Length: 155
Image (tube, rainbow, N blue to C red; front, side):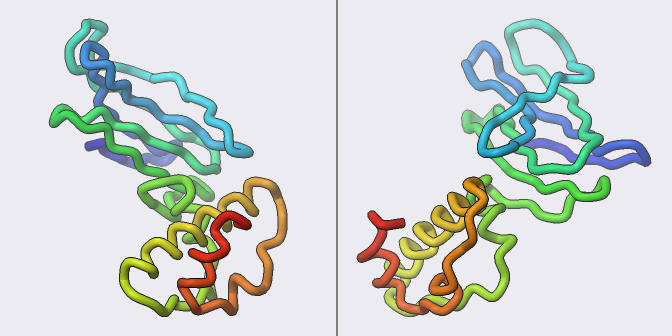
């Protein structure tokens, strides 16, 4: 898994890369829904086996980290950096954008319905933010998970 450290000038991130297995590690800044890949500042080698890549973040924004874990999986994580500090951390870009919204009501329904509705609501909030649109007031009032499920095609 990636390792994040901080010094006075920047945040340094260490990411695994497994080029021979087709699993790439990277760090990308996300702006307007697009990824801009950051160059490595150092690496442990240039062969086809496992490598460790080193990146540096020196400006604010939202970043996606992909770690090509030796165990066989790729792990993704998104972080938000403000004033040189990591202020939010989630498993995906959508979850990170949705987590920034406060005052969202708890949903009612079965656990399966709630999980599905939370996913729909998170994606909708992320789409609104990416498009620069205001989130409708009803999102802050609606507590019925069935509402999101029944109207998922509209979101």
